Amino acid sequence: MVQLAALSRRTDPIVLLLCNRKDLFFIRVSKLLDCSSPKSMWFLWRIFSKGTHMLQCLCGKSLKKNKNPSDPQLKGIVTRLYCRQGYYLQMNPDGSLDGTKDDSTNSSLFNLIPVGLRVVAIQSVKTGLYIAMNGEGHLYTSELFTAECKFKESVFENYYVVYSSMLYRQQESGRAWFLGLNKEGQAMKGNRVKKTKPAAHFLPKPLEVAMYREPSLHDVGETVPKAGVPPSKSTSEPVVMNGGKPVSKPSKPT
Image (cartoon, rainbow, N blue to C red; front, side):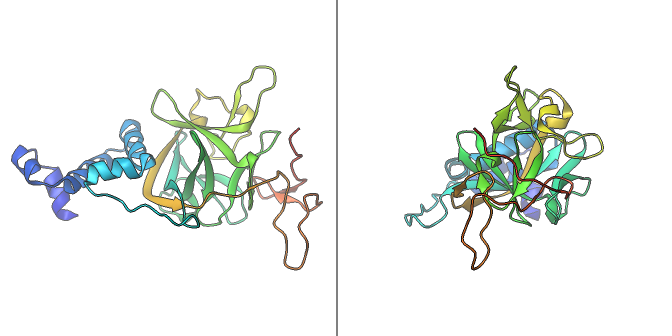
């Protein structure tokens, strides 16, 4: 890596010609990592999110395909989500969401799992919980993957990424509800976050490409069954919403 870093600082075309495609790929990635501008981070995110084909072209290597249907089939990324407000999105041990200035904490690591065309599930690496948004715009965390855990991933004109609920939006105007942090780093209600404001703008900082099994889709409000207890879709047990406060379970969409 030291040699690659030294090569990346040289502009001699002869050196670049002598490098193989894999070396050139890592040189380009190291340059992008050194430059933390939104455009460079967006391009790096595109490299990781494109996955197998792009990595194969850049590295000059063919990647083996999994033929076993039980093996992980979805290609996602492990990343940190940097909000334009100056915070990294994090999930605390109690399941609450907020922002942190620390760029090295494990609580800010998330799996971005593709579950549709430009649709992702955002799962905490540390807790294994999914980020979800209910019909009132409140963010909460769920052990099970439901329709409320699906977020549309869109690139804004300034190269930042916005995440909007796939299930809910303003009824009259049709305006989307977005994931967002305020100036104090607190999670906001989705219906109060505007697409054009820094609160909604996130910059994925990918760390690695990972393979995932497709999450099993459960009904909204369904809970993880306890040992020896038959599963039930109707329960009075509370769920932890943002802030760690127990509230009644979100109602099932009609």
